[in-house]
Length: 421
Ligand code: AMP
Picture 1 (tube, protein in one colour):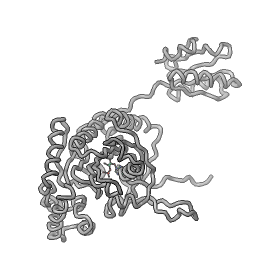
Picture 2: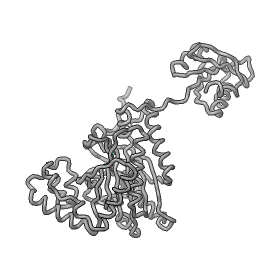
Picture 3: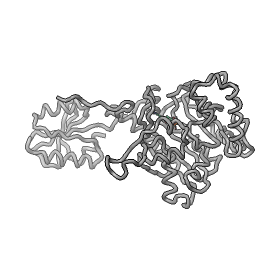
Picture 4: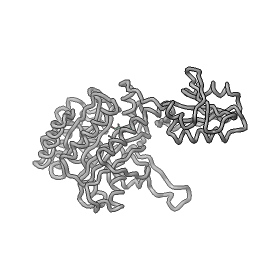
């Protein structure tokens, strides 16, 4: 026997026992997308690297350190093409939005997607190289109502998923008018304390000073004394942020201001937010995050268009729900069709097809084993009922066996659904 091949590091297999919890959480995301009137969009798992470097910023971790590169088949024309697996969904969605002329459709566009993202990061508990995000984007709405609307949507998602005590941490990082002044204030402050910065932060200070606040190893005292973006907002950004907070207050959404919340990507403007279970602010604990990106559409070659969105981590939501003891809904009862006649497989399949047509969850035993053995395996599979196809009967009639009670009776095939529900 040859050596088994293991999975790449940092990925997870979704096993049958994980399925119900995932389906439940993904189902809530899909359902909420529909209830909040978002339209589905799917973009490819890989895009040109340039899309990410331009959109997310060369100095973002996602581009600088974590890009999963992809090349075409060896020897092909496209071999040297520079593609990457998507680290986040927004850049690809904005690309598609522009490429398909969605900016001339009656707006704003409300789009949602759920799917895998890839970051070549060091794997840890709660941090994977492939993970699933539920993403919503509203393109063409300057807010502030929509800012509050999607933060409320995130909150509702966790509530429906059964993850309790979720807080939205909130900040505003200003716009093209006021951010340069804030940047300068940060540079002045941190440059005066450069000896207390990590190597990484010293570099960030030169390329993107806001991201020094993102450094998890930043000296807490230094962080606490750092200039705050909220003190540097221009009048328009200040009014916008005040309106977002007032709306969240009216909606009763739990939020807290976090002056260090700048988010890791360059495209953010004004409102930024992240969701955590209260009191759990560790590195791998963010359940979701997002913000406004009023400059991104233009940066990617389109007209000046505002946008806002969030990405919610499905892996971490499923983990958090499990930690908080949320049970996945039980599957519908399983039925197994069995038959005494080893040659008569077609009647078994026909009966199973009819039961499935009636909406039941059905397996078929296609083996030549004795009936007793077939019933034993049906019970081991967790089936509540077995349906015996009896060669003596017409196909319109079957034997319904309750495997728990070990009782059986003859019944019309079209009455099975009503008696097992
Ligand atoms: P981000 O855009 O990095 O804030 O990501 C949005 C959400 O996706 C985070 O709040 C996490 O819930 C989830 N997420 C991000 N990176 C990872 C990862 N490497 N593994 C698992 N979940 C992740």
